[in-house]
Structure formats: structure tokens, C-alpha cells
Amino acid sequence: MKNYFIAFSTLFLVEFAIAYFHFNPFIRGFLGDVLVILLLYSFLKIFIRNNILKTAVFVLGFAYFVELLQFFKLAEKFNIQSEILLTLIGSVFDFYDLVAYSIGFLLILLIEKYSLKMKTLKFPID
Image (cartoon, rainbow, N blue to C red):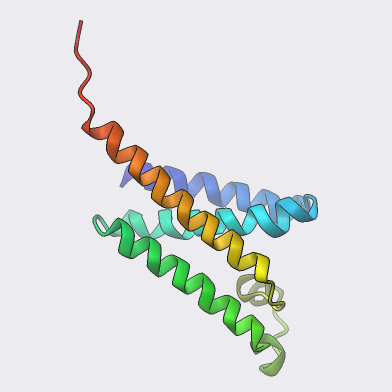
């Protein structure tokens, strides 16, 4: 739980920096989307102990759903003016966002697999 809180806090600061400092389009538009999946996952894992795969799939599904809403121009149809809401839900569908979310999902699985492997290793004490 502590590790997830640290990960969430770090990722939140990184995402804030990416948004605030307007890094180049690759970092802001693609890497930021990869990291937001890790951010959401680490936030949920602060409260959810087990179910690594279910939690990761939920986060991926949620991200895909938000992108689907962008495809159907939800922000436009509901005339959403708030910059905060527009940033959260987005306003433009982009297929590469789905790719970025999928990469974030795969990173979660790799990190969790590595983390579990490291927990099971027993190091001899000299």
C-alpha cells in the first residue's frame, strides 16, 4: 500500500509537470497517456489489496470508455466549457491514445510481475 501511494504521488507530480510545462507533443500527448494509466492504477491499488489483473483491466477499460466518449464528441454535445473537465475527459478522439493506454496496461503487468518475483526471492544473509 505504501509503495502504491509513493508511485501515485510521484506519477501525479510528473503528470502535473507535463501538463504545466507543455512539453513536446510526444511527451504531453503520448507518454502522458501511458503514465495516466499507471497513475490511475496506483491510486486504486492504495485501497485495493488484491486483484492485480482485475484492477489493471478495469483501469484500461475505463480509459477506453473515456476515449469512446471522445469519439462520440460528448464534450461538444453537452457543451462542456470547464477547462478542468475538458482536460479530464478530453475532447478529441485519437487512436494513438488507445495504443498509449495499452502500453500503460502492459507496463503495469510487467512491473507487478517483476515486483512479485522480487518479493519471492530469498537472499542469503552473510
